[in-house]
Length: 196
Image (cartoon, rainbow, N blue to C red; front, side, top):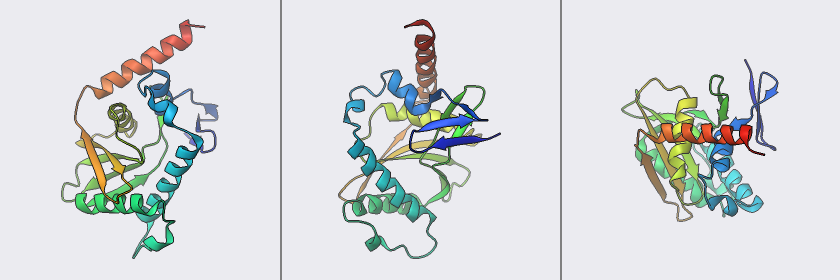
């Protein structure tokens, strides 16, 4: 069973066949993102990708990380990620690993899955943001949590990596977020099937 993701087109493939629905495409098509969609430009996407790249380098580093090697425009946001990880005593288990649920026929890629010491039995699904945290991020993280097929206690946290070097973390706790996402997924599929 193989899941692949083409990073250039953001198209998932499961066992050689394209996956029609991803977490992001469902949120976009359902209108959950609202006017935020208009703010996603090629430039903002490139900036966010660069920040994620350097955060990943930091997460994978073993030893002293050289923050001076990060270009000035990204460094404060990576420092914000470092500070959040230190304050949470957060340990990374997976970084941007594409996930797929064959029953739901849904794919997605959470930024980070890990746990916080000392409660290592609790899985934490984290999404790093370079812009403000929005209400639809709760639905996004609920979907990622279900794709991760977490059977343990879990938390969903969005971390805004501010250009001040300070993180702004929001934990989403509404247990209905998953049901709201499922309703949006169902609506998107119904519209695709019944409207022209």
